[in-house]
Amino acid sequence: MKSERLVVASGFILISLIWGSTWLAIKIGLESVPPFFGVALRFTVAMIILAIIQWIRGHRLPSNRKSILCYLTVGVLSFSFPFALVYWGEQYVPSGLTAILFAVNPFIVALGSHLYLPGERSNVFKFGGIVVGFAGIGYIFWNDLSLDVAGVRGMGAILISTIMQGISLVTVKRIAQHLSPAELSLGGMLFGVPLLYILAFAFELPSSINLDLKGAGSILYLGLFGTVITFLTYYWLLKRVEAVYLSLVAFVTPVLAVILGSVVLNERLESHVFSGAGLVLAGIVIVNSKDLYLALMDRKKRMR
Image (cartoon, rainbow, N blue to C red; front, side, top):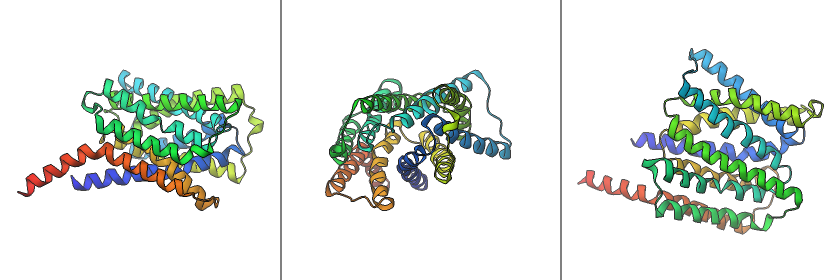
């Protein structure tokens, strides 16, 4: 039991670290590849890697009606339109506002879990912790907010993406427990990637793709680390923890992105970043406080 908790915590840290770096990788990639082609190529790389893994393991994708419904749900609500909206929106929205919009995700997941996951209903600890964590993200990025007309459209795109991702998380938790992380990821991409290429060829020119070192490196990094490793870990965690707990990644990744920016781009870390990060950490502790208290009481009983 203790070892599994350690593995779960390690998985949460892993996806937080990698997804915290993907914001920078996406920004770099957009300098060479337009958004829809960029995300389509990213998931093409990931899909090929997952297909090879499944082939080596000798596993075939389940093709019953329930599984196909799960693939379609993930393909539409996670791997296609939400990521296309994020890539497009990041062209016009400051990173601070992007972080705040992504931090709405735990609210969506908390509401969906309360309504559709009977074993994961919200309580004052979960909601209070989410509010505190969101306040921390807002405090970190508040001074960076600025919008023009294009920014408003970009904000709307990212907010829609955040809502869709939240719905996807709750839906997968509800209907896709019979599928392995690899099956769910690969099946979802088989539906999502064609939709991305339809968007790309409809709105962008293939001639605008410039696969230089930065563009190719961004796509390969996002495909292998930002997609294959993270989503396999993400769906593995979803089978073992409540959806709300997993959604808290949306609080952690912006903080890590700021720290990474200071390391890679020599951006200065202001004092309010540390204060906001403290609020984020406090929010995560509050969300988990009830479970931590019950675990502590259980441990005391067993020690008697």
